[in-house]
Image (cartoon, rainbow, N blue to C red; front, top):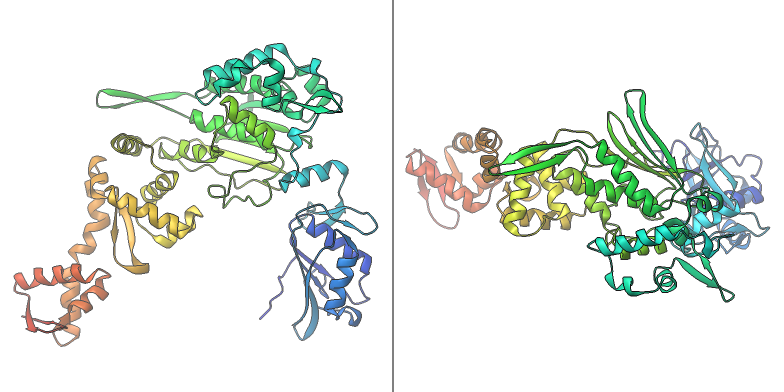
Length: 550
């Protein structure tokens, strides 16, 4: 059985060693991989995956490990071993992800990327990309540094007024900041920094309160666009280099014009349900600006079209963050100073868990979850699908949160959403769909059972969950509830009797529990019903009571 992957990828590299692969080129490949995602290099395998074997001079795994360590700065510690594949020796080199930027001993800095045809290559890492890489590794805060060429005169007095108004009016704004003088406020929010005794604007300062003309000149990467398409027709196409505080307000106004609301009645109350949740949009937009790579040319783009809303920003996820762990990874980003300023003035979530709000904004209306699947190493893309709201589900969530006096957790909301769509699921399926740990899911499920929102059936790994009878009843879906839970219980008596007939008419409580995947107490209850109906009788007592068909 083949153990070597069949093709190359960003983290898998094949190199032919028929004519002894150059040691210098080998080191280049190692540096490129450690500066990207790490991975495994197989020496003695052709680009097409054919195994041709390692050169005799490269069969010394310890020697190759030493060569790489001595030829990289700082030294890269790889794990190398000779493995046998298709009766040929291959040198397998496992390369870790470096926690800093590595170069060859001759000074070359390299990184790895995928070409248009999907094949990998190693290319030079330019000076601005070093900043990007260090930001991805959370080793450098680009937003906290001084902006080259900027002076205090590049700050816009009108944006200062806007900043103070936001702090005053936003619930999360730190009101004590309002008592500070301008220079003190700048220092508190890290809008300025001191270099050789002189005060300069930071990247954060220019992004928040800089003059648009100065931002356009000194930070050509800080652009944003808002677009609306109807079919192939462009209805709105606006691009700006304005300060973020102004852009936030403008984009929220633009979205309001293209975000119709529909009112639904809950008894005496009316509730407006928007096409796109406003809080989710706000958090998505703040995340896009807050975590984008400001060293890259590119635009934060908001697009509304027939399919839904897309918010994209240049730069991939920070190291350690993936599509699968978005909801559980510790909050951290590329621009901590900018993120901190946005939190303190009240625009961003204090907890750094804005992603929860983005998911909540779709789930509470019974809509498909936000989609980050098109995110790449150079672009983060959030897609929120247009979909009709599920009024019954929205009412269920609202009523339950009112009853509890607090919001449901994002984990509970996700479980309820899954059960609404799939009707019945086991624990493994829920874990697979949410990418959350089994312990978190199990805890949330037990809480939902205690709250009467879901029900469990069966034991062990076969235990499944459905929305509770109360939920179905309140949603006027009692028939659907019976379909989900009633049919199997109606069939219990016949299944018990059928098993007894195959065992010479005799059955035990343990037999019933195993057959129906229920608890022993539940099994005893089912047997008692059959005894009362005179279909079974107690055949013999003792520790393992037996029952026989009448």
